[in-house]
Image 1 (cartoon, each protein chain N blue to C red):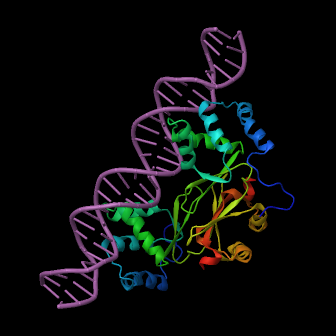
Image 2 (image 1 turned 90 degrees about the vertical axis):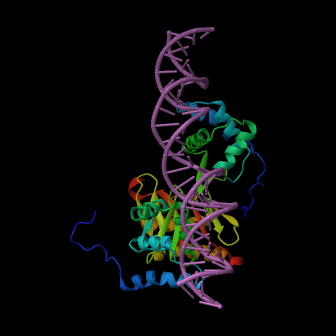
Image 3 (image 1 turned 30 degrees about the horizontal axis):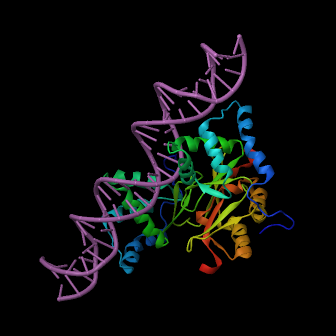
Length: 155
Length: 155
DNA sequence: GCCGTTGTTGCAACTCATTGCAGCAAGCGG
DNA sequence: CCGCTTGCTGCAATGAGTTGCAACAACGGC
């Protein structure tokens, strides 16, 4: 799973912290604003690894500020996605699933029978990406890929 | 869309007709029922090629019977999917997309920039299916696969 | 042809996500 | 510190899809 030599994924590495702190400036640089609502969502995201659904994020924001409005959250997520800070895909049921730094570039594999899920790492996804690149000149967004089927043990 | 006179891709081949007519018996064989609502949906599906969204199907059923109820349609689609008569995937926005006989076994490729879509045929998908089969023993449901990215001309 | 079993329907309520719009406020210039 | 511009928020309405439940009706049996 972890490539040799890579440091164990600890809670918040220094460069992750830096990445989150730069969000404010990255917004400003585009003429966008740093509002309390965005601050709250970024705070929640910075404590998140892997993937979360949109509804999850709303709930977590509401824990901190019960007046959180869904449309604001979704709109902020759109903005953050433009900045490349999060990416979204869709679960097996089509619901939104957000991928958070620093593991944004991966896809998902879901077993329809047992419901288990695995990540398709960048390395693993390379075959898929390469084949569509070669055949069609198509640039696959791996983070948006969700593949459903049956896993080894459920077959 | 279709210039008149030119026969569209042959509306219904003999074996397709047979497949649709057998639906009633296939339901009965499982102890399920052949109701007017199911008859209506099957009628609509039998005139459909490729893929349609759930909302599309509801609208088309309503054209014939304005009293059509969404939940009934979705539930019937679930049943038909169990029978292997339709399959569903999700569009780039996560909305349902049903694949109808006889072209059920294909995936989709969507360009995020221009919105164009292509089918991933069974042959083309073979690479993807084979690589996950080999690496994980995972049986991919190609008809549920939607891959998003940027096409050659939009890059 | 009527009856009973049980799969289905219709409906209402609910979840997730999106959109239009009017009022609000972040952040810049003075 | 103040005012202005314009990006953002809150809200309400909408659309897609799901679920629980009571009433209904297919259809096999009598």
